[in-house]
Structures are given as C-alpha cells and as structure tokens.
Image 1: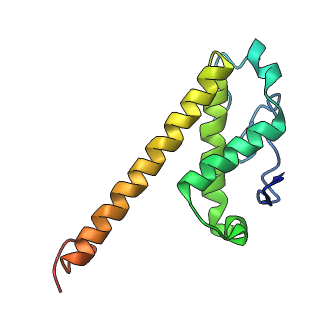
Image 2 (image 1 turned 180 degrees about the horizontal axis):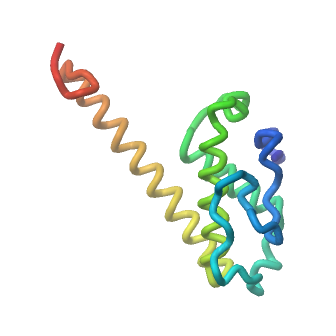
Image 3 (image 1 turned 90 degrees about the vertical axis):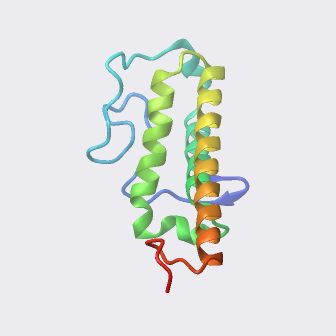
Length: 137
C-alpha cells in the first residue's frame, strides 16, 4: 500500500482489499462479509486506494510509529489483519459513506483513548516503583 505522504506496503501475502473477494481481508481465517454481503450504492463512491488509506490510518492508531520499516515487520501481520478486518466490517455494516467515515473515526478515537489510558497507567506504575504485576521491587 502506498500513499503520497510516504510509502508503506502491506506484507506481500496480504494483497489489496477487493470488495468482490469472498474473503476481503486478504488473510486466512478472517471474517467473511456479513450475511447481507451486498454492494451498497455508496460503495461505488469509495475507491480501493481510499480503503487502503483508511486501513493504514487504523494501523497508525493501533501502532503509532514514525519508522515505516516497522510496519513491514513480520510481527505486524496480525495488526494488519486486525486493521483490515475493522475496515472491512465497517464497510459492510455502514449504510452510507458518512456513516462509514464516522464509524472508522469512532474506532480510531477509541483505540487512541485505550492506548493513552494504558500509557498513563504504565507511567503511574513506574512512578510508584510498581512492576508489571503491580508489586513493588
């Protein structure tokens, strides 16, 4: 996947999303389209490049990093798969383009808030000298 702001590629075995594909997430074991699984009128307005861009935005929310090479790390496959699943589920469930954008924005916000809370908790535990289990040294 590439965009004009920087070149970031999904792992080679995770091809681009294809709304006609029976497994649009591009990974084995991912959820198939919803039972409805039909193309909605607004789907015609959404390009594959835009969907890939939005998957990348989800990925950035999950794993904020300034190193593009980190996104191609082998361990990132599950994160890519999750971001694609979230985008695909949202694409299938939304009834309008506006709802699609809104649902994705909500998801990104929730991810960012969860990460911020975890960071705050971790910093508090470090400040108190607590280890990972909440037990002191």
